[in-house]
Length: 220
Image (cartoon, rainbow, N blue to C red; front, side):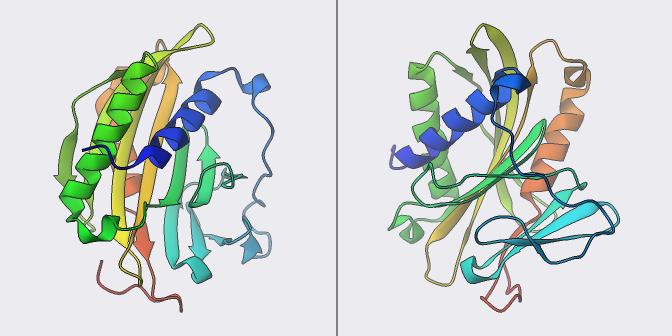
């Protein structure tokens, strides 16, 4: 069942930004450094605060709270994808939040994530990418996370990418889809510890929360 074409567009955009040489990608606005004034604007809808070793993104009007590792994150333009709320990157990590297609909220979470994967796998296979089998895991924060590896070549550069998806319902009963990817050239030294990269990717996916619009996090 392939109901979600917009997430396929999202991932293709992400892969292209990740796989091409850095000099080819447009420069994104950088976050302030640790010690600067907190609560600064990160994107059109979100503000951020820096803790000792993490970046907290709060998108109050959009009912989203995200905790990201480290401080070296850059905002990206979410307007290129319908329903896009937030794209951010701290290479080689990239995250995105997209409102799922209307009506997806009537499906159970496992079925929704399977539909996301099935739609992506079909589109990416037609583009010549290899997409591995999905693995689903219940994470410590209670999130159901679907993870898989994909690989291929863009502009002659071979790459590998570990991906994790989760989704949460906001107050209107519809899902926000949260995507985390870790992408490096296929011969990069990071892949010597691919299991560690996978753990990190899933851990980031497990730090995504919806709020009640007032900054409070109801049971997820």
